[in-house]
Length: 145
Image (cartoon, rainbow, N blue to C red; front, side, top):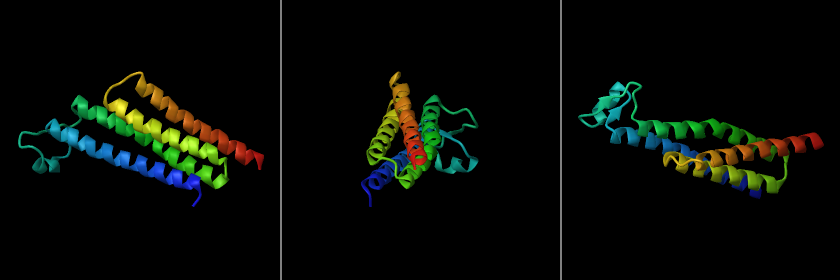
Protein backbone atom coordinates (compact mmCIF):
# COMPACT_ATOMS: atom_id res chain seq x y z
CA UNK A 1 0.00 0.00 0.00
CA UNK A 2 1.37 3.42 -0.93
CA UNK A 3 1.90 5.98 1.82
CA UNK A 4 -0.64 8.32 0.18
CA UNK A 5 -3.30 5.61 0.10
CA UNK A 6 -2.61 4.87 3.76
CA UNK A 7 -3.06 8.56 4.66
CA UNK A 8 -6.24 8.74 2.55
CA UNK A 9 -7.62 5.65 4.32
CA UNK A 10 -6.82 7.07 7.77
CA UNK A 11 -8.30 10.49 6.95
CA UNK A 12 -11.41 8.93 5.40
CA UNK A 13 -11.88 6.78 8.48
CA UNK A 14 -11.52 9.75 10.84
CA UNK A 15 -14.03 11.79 8.84
CA UNK A 16 -16.49 8.89 8.70
CA UNK A 17 -16.27 8.49 12.48
CA UNK A 18 -16.82 12.22 12.82
CA UNK A 19 -20.02 11.98 10.75
CA UNK A 20 -21.28 9.10 12.88
CA UNK A 21 -20.42 11.01 16.05
CA UNK A 22 -22.37 14.08 14.91
CA UNK A 23 -25.39 11.95 14.05
CA UNK A 24 -25.38 10.45 17.53
CA UNK A 25 -24.73 13.84 19.10
CA UNK A 26 -27.80 15.26 17.35
CA UNK A 27 -29.97 12.55 18.91
CA UNK A 28 -28.29 13.01 22.28
CA UNK A 29 -28.80 16.76 22.36
CA UNK A 30 -32.41 16.35 21.25
CA UNK A 31 -32.99 13.84 24.07
CA UNK A 32 -31.25 16.13 26.58
CA UNK A 33 -33.60 18.92 25.51
CA UNK A 34 -36.50 16.47 25.95
CA UNK A 35 -37.70 16.38 22.39
CA UNK A 36 -38.42 13.66 19.88
CA UNK A 37 -38.71 13.92 16.12
CA UNK A 38 -40.65 10.85 15.04
CA UNK A 39 -43.88 9.69 16.66
CA UNK A 40 -42.47 6.19 17.19
CA UNK A 41 -39.64 7.69 19.25
CA UNK A 42 -42.09 8.76 21.95
CA UNK A 43 -41.78 5.40 23.69
CA UNK A 44 -38.01 5.65 24.06
CA UNK A 45 -37.90 9.33 25.06
CA UNK A 46 -38.36 10.99 28.42
CA UNK A 47 -41.93 10.77 29.71
CA UNK A 48 -42.21 14.56 29.52
CA UNK A 49 -40.62 14.81 26.04
CA UNK A 50 -42.43 16.75 23.36
CA UNK A 51 -42.80 16.19 19.64
CA UNK A 52 -40.58 18.83 18.00
CA UNK A 53 -42.22 18.79 14.54
CA UNK A 54 -39.77 21.28 13.04
CA UNK A 55 -39.43 23.35 16.23
CA UNK A 56 -36.05 22.03 17.33
CA UNK A 57 -34.16 23.50 20.27
CA UNK A 58 -31.34 25.87 19.18
CA UNK A 59 -28.73 23.49 20.64
CA UNK A 60 -30.03 20.66 18.47
CA UNK A 61 -30.12 22.93 15.42
CA UNK A 62 -26.46 23.89 15.94
CA UNK A 63 -25.37 20.24 15.95
CA UNK A 64 -27.51 19.56 12.89
CA UNK A 65 -25.92 22.48 11.03
CA UNK A 66 -22.42 21.26 11.90
CA UNK A 67 -23.42 17.77 10.72
CA UNK A 68 -24.87 19.06 7.43
CA UNK A 69 -21.87 21.27 6.82
CA UNK A 70 -19.53 18.29 7.12
CA UNK A 71 -21.86 16.16 5.02
CA UNK A 72 -21.71 18.71 2.19
CA UNK A 73 -17.93 18.53 1.91
CA UNK A 74 -17.25 14.83 2.42
CA UNK A 75 -18.42 13.55 -0.99
CA UNK A 76 -16.01 16.00 -2.64
CA UNK A 77 -13.15 14.84 -0.43
CA UNK A 78 -13.87 11.14 -1.01
CA UNK A 79 -14.21 11.60 -4.79
CA UNK A 80 -11.25 13.91 -5.22
CA UNK A 81 -9.06 11.74 -3.01
CA UNK A 82 -9.82 8.69 -5.13
CA UNK A 83 -9.21 10.58 -8.36
CA UNK A 84 -6.03 12.07 -6.93
CA UNK A 85 -4.65 8.64 -6.10
CA UNK A 86 -5.74 7.17 -9.44
CA UNK A 87 -4.05 9.91 -11.49
CA UNK A 88 -0.72 9.59 -9.70
CA UNK A 89 -0.62 13.26 -8.76
CA UNK A 90 2.30 14.28 -6.49
CA UNK A 91 2.55 12.24 -3.29
CA UNK A 92 3.54 15.24 -1.17
CA UNK A 93 0.46 17.08 -2.40
CA UNK A 94 -1.73 14.16 -1.35
CA UNK A 95 -0.23 14.11 2.13
CA UNK A 96 -0.65 17.87 2.60
CA UNK A 97 -4.15 18.06 1.11
CA UNK A 98 -5.56 15.00 2.88
CA UNK A 99 -4.16 15.94 6.29
CA UNK A 100 -5.06 19.63 5.91
CA UNK A 101 -8.65 18.83 4.95
CA UNK A 102 -9.09 16.35 7.77
CA UNK A 103 -7.56 18.62 10.37
CA UNK A 104 -9.54 21.61 9.18
CA UNK A 105 -12.84 19.70 9.18
CA UNK A 106 -12.31 18.24 12.66
CA UNK A 107 -11.39 21.66 14.04
CA UNK A 108 -14.29 23.27 12.13
CA UNK A 109 -16.75 20.95 13.86
CA UNK A 110 -15.28 21.70 17.28
CA UNK A 111 -15.44 25.46 16.86
CA UNK A 112 -18.88 25.23 15.21
CA UNK A 113 -20.28 23.40 18.23
CA UNK A 114 -18.64 25.95 20.55
CA UNK A 115 -19.88 28.91 18.40
CA UNK A 116 -16.38 30.35 17.90
CA UNK A 117 -15.95 32.90 15.15
CA UNK A 118 -13.82 33.76 13.23
CA UNK A 119 -12.32 30.28 13.75
CA UNK A 120 -15.28 28.52 12.17
CA UNK A 121 -14.82 30.51 8.97
CA UNK A 122 -11.04 30.09 9.02
CA UNK A 123 -11.21 26.30 9.34
CA UNK A 124 -13.95 26.09 6.71
CA UNK A 125 -11.77 28.10 4.33
CA UNK A 126 -8.72 25.91 5.01
CA UNK A 127 -10.74 22.78 4.24
CA UNK A 128 -12.07 24.34 1.04
CA UNK A 129 -8.59 25.44 -0.02
CA UNK A 130 -7.30 21.90 0.41
CA UNK A 131 -10.06 20.64 -1.91
CA UNK A 132 -9.20 23.32 -4.47
CA UNK A 133 -5.52 22.37 -4.22
CA UNK A 134 -6.45 18.75 -4.97
CA UNK A 135 -8.37 19.87 -8.07
CA UNK A 136 -5.42 21.96 -9.26
CA UNK A 137 -2.90 19.16 -8.72
CA UNK A 138 -5.19 16.62 -10.41
CA UNK A 139 -5.66 18.90 -13.41
CA UNK A 140 -1.93 19.62 -13.67
CA UNK A 141 -1.20 15.88 -13.62
CA UNK A 142 -3.91 14.97 -16.11
CA UNK A 143 -3.09 17.76 -18.57
CA UNK A 144 0.65 17.07 -18.36
CA UNK A 145 0.25 13.46 -19.48
